Amino acid sequence: MIKYISFERKGIKSYGILNEEYVFDIRENFNDMPGTLIEYIKGPRLSNNVILNSKARLKNDVRIISPIEVPQRGIFCVGMNYREHLSEIKDLQMEKEPEYPVFFTKNMNRILGDGDYINVSDSPSTCPDYEAELALIIGRDCKNLTEENAESVIFGYSIANDFSARDLQKDYSQWMKGKSLDDFCAIGPYIVDAKDLQVENLEIKSFVNGELRQNSNTKNLIFNIKRILIDLSKGMTIKAGDIIFTGTPKGVGGGFNPPKYLKKNDKVTCFIENIGELTNFVK
Image (cartoon, rainbow, N blue to C red; front, side):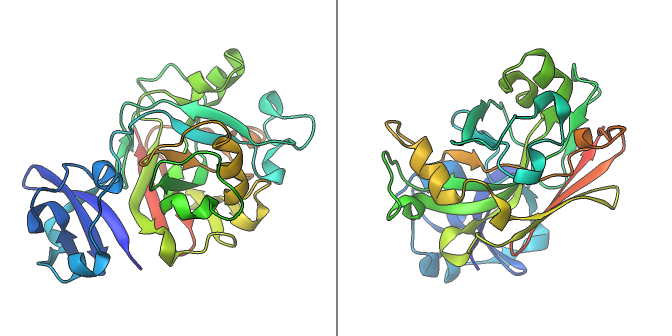
């Protein structure tokens, strides 16, 4: 399984492929490579076999960071895409299952990685929440996708925590403000090559301080990956390097009575089968 990572070593950031305990540094091993993974995704790209036959260093020699620290534009998100999640947050619920995907954007200056801290104490929200999601990263520019070619544009998949300010979502009606506070987004720990992963039937879970909160499966998506891409690309160009969050299942903090919002010193972990775990800490 090919896992693309971004990392830092001796104060210098780079990217490459993680293969068990070894890291293959694309920037170091090959000439004229772009500076970030998101730029590399845009192409042209090297053969993975060529990369895996280059010089390697130990994983312990680097610090893995978010695969995409700075998105090229707003993250495309699908809201209310698991049936059980539709009615669990009273202030945000929909009257019935949507006929079309509910799209919105999440505008982030930077994206946290595995092990990073989310600073909720400096945010204007008193209701910070977590959302485990399957994220996909687009590998080439596309428009008006069809059932036959939709999945061919996907570069890879990752785990996302779509941190959300529930009070701001309610106050401002439209979700963008409550989704776009600084630090309210994490992706990682790596991007799995789309050719190596079938995502139609994967367990997806979240834990807060070890307590299981969300427990579902991607087969429960109302709109699957193909449908999301087909609808989003109608008349609109999706760019290589774009990020899409596909929705979160039941079990978010705002769905409990009383609510279980995130607080200082919490540890929140998102898990997706065959990808791994993404853990963040609250300060």
